[in-house]
Structures are given as structure tokens and as C-alpha cells.
Amino acid sequence: MSHEILRRRFGGLGVEVEVDECFFTRRKYHKGRRMQTGTVTMFRIYERATERGFHVQVCDRSSAVLLSEIQRFIAPGTIVISDAIKSYRLCMWPN
Image 1: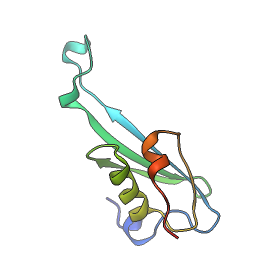
Image 2 (image 1 turned 60 degrees about the horizontal axis):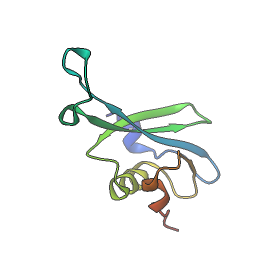
Image 3 (image 1 turned 135 degrees about the vertical axis):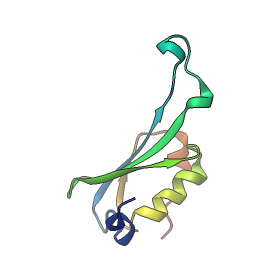
Image 4 (image 1 turned 90 degrees about the horizontal axis):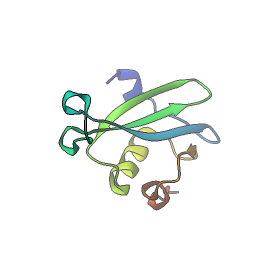
């Protein structure tokens, strides 16, 4: 992980930051159903104004995991834009 990402949080008062998750899976011989054992979950953060962003691997997309990543990398007062999955609705930004 870049040292710049660890030194400065994304966003700030009134700054828009997008968050999303994506999944990488492996299929045997590129056929059949997706295999759950080969799934990797990535969490994406993208700051619109500066066009900075990055991905970090997370263990799952539960509300607790996503909230901890948001608090770790995004500054308070940021406008967080996401899709409407249940995990994000449960994430309440601390004041």
C-alpha cells in the first residue's frame, strides 16, 4: 500500500468520495458456476475531485468490515457515495 494513502485520508468537509466493493472469482476451466472458495472481495475508494483512489482487500462485505474501512481511510464530514446495499445502510458515520 502506498505511503501517501496512509498519511492522508480521503475526502474532507463536503468532498465527495465513492465507495464500492467488487469480487474476483475463479472458475475451473472457465465453465460452470462460480466457486465460493476462490472469491476475493475488494473495497474501492475513489475521490472525485482529485481522481485519487485505491482498492484494499477485505475479508467480507459485512457492515462491520465496511464501516471500519470507511473510518480508516475517509475523513469525517465527507459525502460518501455508494450503492444501496444493506451493509452501507447500516454504516452510520460517527459525528
